[in-house]
Length: 217
Image (cartoon, rainbow, N blue to C red; front, side, top):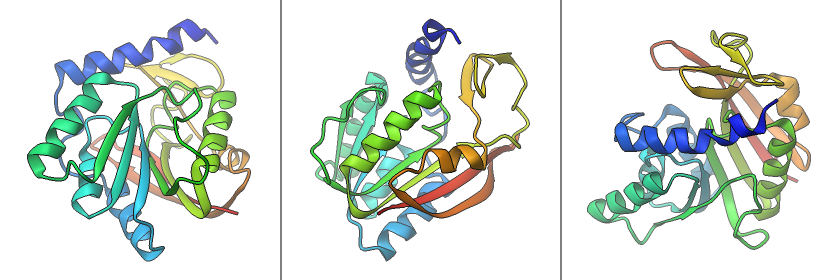
């Protein structure tokens, strides 16, 4: 595993956001729509989104009345989210910070009721880094808080294709993806109860993913 190659992914995403302003479109992901329903049922109003990209889900949450804090390691992505929030009149509900999730979160303990991330877990992160990420989410969630994340799994058509970058990481078209098994989901759930692990598909390929819902115990 070459950490220098993994570290270059941040610049690769930055370049993608600059050259392709609407890489993932402007409509919210199906995962975010489902997560909003779960947060509403639990009475959760303040959430943290990790790896918000260009903001299609973050802006959706804000328009639904959630107070949302965004962390992303792309300056371009965060700037665009804040600009769009002002245009939509939801700037009081959404704030953003530049941050690498391999480092401690800039928040106090038990600050958020919920956490959401769409395919952040399957970025170029090692299992050790993912465990640190999971521990940080656990730290900043309130007791009973909900962590919802999606991740491409080992049944996906890209798994074991492309360039192997160590563990279950494979590079295709310049993007490195960490593919998950259900065992890995369970391995990274220390401190949480697993509410459910659901299969779903996204895009024309299609990408095959898990929609994971965890509750802090």
